[in-house]
Length: 207
Image 1 (tube, one colour):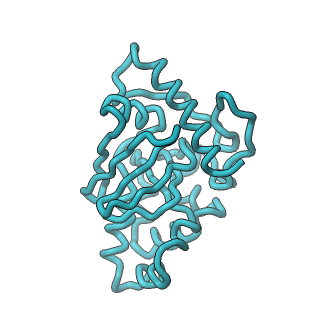
Image 2 (cartoon, helix red, strand yellow):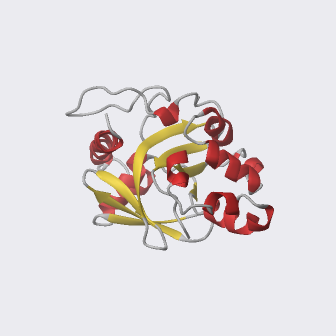
Image 3 (cartoon, rainbow, N blue to C red):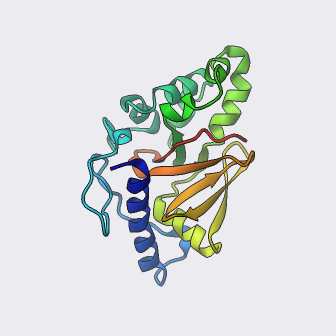
């Protein structure tokens, strides 16, 4: 199953969950029972799929940094977090919501961008970019979808960096638009961590 279909199926399930909870609680505090880390979230109108590669090696009893380091999809992200000196922060109690770019997302940046950002003299810029991918608190997929629904199709979330991301419903999934107008697709949701949650994105977001 390709990433687009997986994202569509997962977010369809999240929309259903959010709607069911609408009469019991506010959308901004919606919660769902987390799906197992090694299994895909329940799907509707679609066959079962293999677990996302991003979840490989992850465990809900480990923190964001340890789980990212265990996944084959996030080696560049882990290198960047280390270079920026954010390891201790993201291993903290949190909770944090991380929109995590994959290795492929970093590779799609202009040639030389990652190498430049990993240099010591670029630490401030790298820190700004990485913290732009982090939201304080645990915002699971149902909560995010609830915010989008309440906002009539979009929701603005504030990042730890201080900037904002605009989450939108699009083609049965969710996209994030950054301050530069770049759009990333949320390809995998609700990878639960001991100190928060990871949602996988296919582009590096820029403040």
